[in-house]
Image (cartoon, rainbow, N blue to C red; front, top):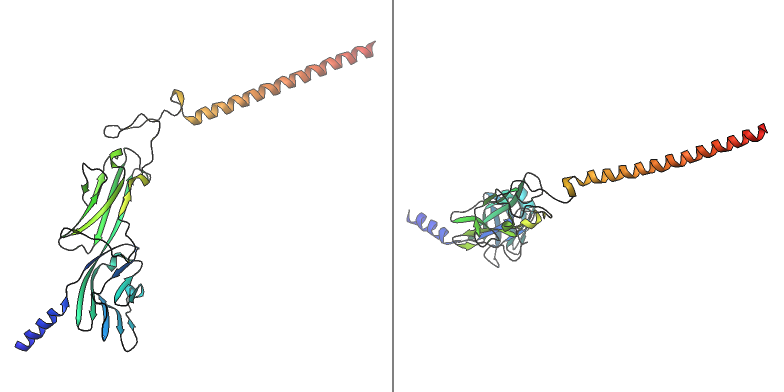
Length: 270
């Protein structure tokens, strides 16, 4: 019994504390094993799924799961390409007799606009930052460009977009008060969404702020008529003038012909 307890204690001592990594959907991330070298073998697992085994003597082995096809072992680290939400979870790197437990958080950012796909003043917008495998003690917040209200929850609902919402919104993920950042070897995640990419400028309008307005009426054309109406009226006027010219020329031609016929008739009579 003492031998079993001692064996379990030794296994616990050989399991080193791991790191928390962050990746965005579609990006690339590198998980550090925690060791720079190994003497016999190196193995990577995702939960219970086997991914890779590397031996100092012998051929490497690759798992049959889909994640194994999108990942590769470089020295001791695991590099994952085209990250998916299903990649989030627990990873285990076993170097010889030492296990290193790591966690991968995968996030995605989305923006929805109402009523149209292009966001304008007075419209509604929802910014959503979703994190898969969010650990205990971690939280997700939006950081807005407005200094008066810099922090928002993971889902931001802007009922009426104003000029104060303009700027860069950044999704911040913190664990135990420490902001998570991707490793330097990975592609930087697109945690930022610039509202200026979705807001179209409303020029020549009577609405300057959208806190109280309901409809922004443009005064681009005089007398409150549509610009297309003015274009149509101009085309009709030009067509009417063309008809008048044609009728005038035709009348002159007809009158000239009548005069000629009268002269010819009088000459024959004489």
